[in-house]
Image (cartoon, rainbow, N blue to C red; front, side):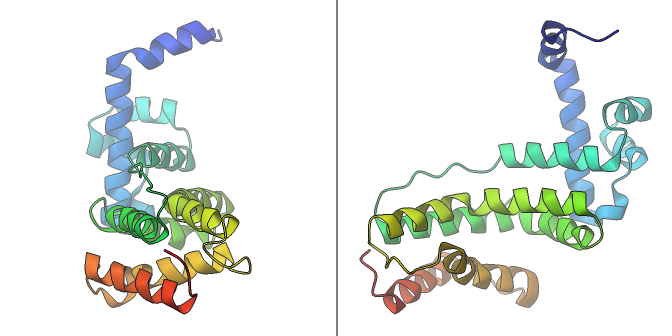
Length: 200
């Protein structure tokens, strides 16, 4: 028998169901971050979370379902940023939000697991795109607004600008394992703005 929308809503509002789902999805994140894609199985998620294996299989019959919903939960924890309307300040705020996700929330490990798997799995590739777009959303908004109101030249490519500003953070975090701190981000933004003769 198919549940009515009211019944589905009641199930979703049941705190026990919410706790069970959250425990399982947090286990997915932990497994991805600590051990990588191959560790994310219904059996491992059940063992890590304390949720029954039958329950895990019932809610998430495929591994991709687990990861997709875990990613949705991950994105719900993404920090909202409050922009000021001042270009330099907003670039700093947007890059700090990316740094926070990469370091404090260990988002870079989550991303590494997604990137590695996306080479072979088109469904994961789509999830990775959503994850990345959400991570750079504020930065893209700042740059688009600055181009539209002519604080940046009209020929500035927002996609290229995102790569130029985020690339050094990713390089330091994932390749050279160097620290990401406020002076680094400030210097990066100042150099990028100076090279474009931008009005902050």
